[in-house]
Amino acid sequence: MTKLKTKLIHGGISTDQTTGAVSVPIYQVSTYKQNALGQPKDYEYSRSGNPTRHALEALIADLEEGVQGFAFGSGLAGIHTVLSLFEPGDHIIMADDVYGGSFRLMDKVFSKLGIRYDLVDMSDLSAIEVAFKPETKAVYVETPSNPLLKILDIEKIAGLAKEHQALTLVDNTFATPYLQRPLTLGADVVMHSATKYLGGHSDVVAGLVVAKSHELAERIAFLQNSIGGVLGPQDSWIVQRGIKTLALRMEAHSKAAMKIAEFLEGHPAVAKVYYPGLASHPGHEIAKKQMATFGGMLSFELVDEGAVKGLVEGLSYFTLAESLGGVESLIEVPAVMTHASIPKDIRESIGIKDGLIRLSPGIEDLDDLLDDLKTGLEGI
Ligand SMILES: Cc1ncc(COP(=O)(O)O)c(C=O)c1O
Ligand SMILES: N[C@@H](CCSC[C@H](N)C(=O)O)C(=O)O
Image (cartoon, rainbow, N blue to C red; front, side):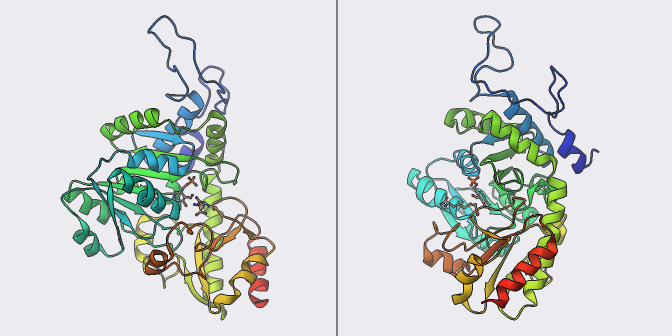
C-alpha cells in the first residue's frame, strides 16, 4: 500500500492529464464549451466542478481514505455544508471544546433553523451515552481540540454513535491526515480548516471535507453545489501545493511543540501546560494510540494572569495573531481572540480561562523559539 508521505506528492490527481505538467494547472475558468446541446464534457460550470479544485478534492479523499473530497471557500463553509445534512428537529451532540466559530455556527445559525445541540465533555464516554436522544443524528468531534488540546477517543465515540444510528463527524484540523485518519477509526465525515496546516503558509483560507460512504458523498456533493461555497481554482492550487510538504512540516511542528511544552512545564512562571505529548496530559494514552505524533499546537496558563498581555505582545518570533498551522510561529489569547464568540460563562465552564495562551510553533530554528519564550518569561 502506498505510504502517506508518497501520497502527499502523488495522491489524488497530481499531474495534468493533457500536458503532463507535474503540478495541476490553475484552470481559472467559470464555464466549459459543450460538445452538443445537452452533452457537456467532464465539466460544465465551475461551482459544480473545476479541474484544479477536483485535483485537490481527489487528493484529500486519498489522504483521509474516504470515497470523495470536497473543497470550500473556508473551513466554516465546509462545516456549514456538512451540518446542512440535518433537518429541523434533529439533535447533534457536540464536543464542548470546539473551535469558537464552529460553536457559533451551531449556536447562532443552525439552532435558528431548528437543529438542536448539546455540548458534552466527550472525554467522558458515559456523558455521551447519557446525551443521546431518539432525535440524535450526529456526534460532532474535534480532536485535538482548539484551544485546550483535549483528546477524544474517535474509535470509541464512533462505536457509540453507530449503536445509536448517528453519524460521527470529526474536525481533523489540528492533527491533519498525516497524524490521524478518523475515517479509518469509524468516523463518517472528516472536516478541515485547510487554512491551517494543510495550506501551511498562512496565505489562504479554505475548507475540506471527506465522506466515507458513497451515500454521504452524494448528499454532500448535492449540498456543495446547491449552497455554492466552493474554493476557487487559484486557492485550490495553493492548498494542493501546501499539502506536498505536509509531512516535513508536521514533523517539525510536532518536534517544536514537544520541546516547548517540556520547557514551559518546567518553568516557574507557568501554571499549566496543555499538550497531548506530555505524560501529564489526561489524553496522552489515547493520543499515543490514535495519532502518529502529538501535533504542533499547545496552550498554557501563567501563574500571574496579569502578565499575559506583556508576554504575548513582547516576543520576537511569535507573532500575535489569530490562526495556526503556518510556517511562522503565532501566539494568541483565545478568550480575547479566536474564541471570543463563545459567551464567557460557557468558555469558563469548559475551562478556557481569560489568561489561556495558545501557541502555534512554526518551523523556525527551535533554539531561537525557545530563547524567545525564555526571554519573554523572564521579562514578565
Ligand atoms: C479547528 C477549527 N475548525 C474550523 C475552523 C474554521 O476554519 P476557517 O477559518 O478556515 O473557516 C477553525 C479556524 O477558523 C479551526 O481552528
Ligand atoms: N475573528 C475570527 C476568529 C478566527 S479564529 C481562526 C482559527 N480558527 C484559530 O483558532 O486561530 C472569527 O470571529 O471568526
